[in-house]
Image (cartoon, rainbow, N blue to C red):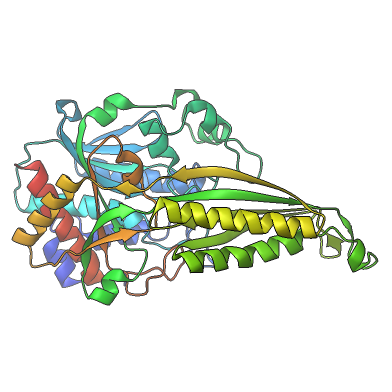
Length: 420
């Protein structure tokens, strides 16, 4: 996306354009070397994003609030009225992530409101915009912390035990950023006020690009989880220890990485060891510990179970062969999420009758706050085409025209839901 405001975009979003908001947000948290984003929870970059959100709410005359779990809300109308329609996403990132994952949904939410005000739309239900905190889990290792806490899917005690790579606990980080960590916890009263939640997100794949569609609807989120594999061997000198005398956990880890690819490919799933920690982490030292984090996802639960079982079985065989101990810990898990069928059908009806967009329905292997809320609130998702299919990378991309199409689709959806 260029930084310029296109005539089409300026015409379609009459108040504060999508493009001007995008330009303001674009530099925040961008690493000068990688050109990717490092917007980690409760850091200065995160605070700058949160300040941006607050400013967008205030310039529009919206009621702004931060809930007990640090999620930000902006309201047109009184949420206490209930049956509110809420949209939004998140502003944090994975390490060196792209510009669109999360922020596209938040910027589009404000732009859709601008579009509706330009239409002189009169709302009959409260309309809310939300920025959920720590969706990516890049700092503390658990995704969707803000929405999990709110939905009661993460307890205060569990959250307080989360620690980042520098040994800083979540409570300490929250307190340093000016938020009370003792206040966090389930927020059923807030969720009870929401009648529908619609999250717009850049597609993390190429289904829309291959079908030629700009916007799509989500059907479901694949079951997915994260597992930690701790391979414990024996530290020793890399130059003097005979190969036959080594208990090198790196060998077991490397073979397990290959096993994960093999098991996933056979099952039609995905499995990735994307993070690793090594001790003592010296060039001339045989490791004593190799800790790897596995992310795996599949279309069905049975398939995912088969993949994880196959990977763990192989890992234990490799560990035993090299005299290495192995511990496997499941750190997080989300079962399959079927989005609300009635709400999805309503969105398809709105988009089919009020725009010339085609709206294919597709599943996704990526987790989202909408998936966390789906057990309590009727939820739906809109996807905007990603021509490269790349995500969680600086190469993540969506064109100006497709972004504007997403804004208009979201505006039509919000109008159809909040003005009936």
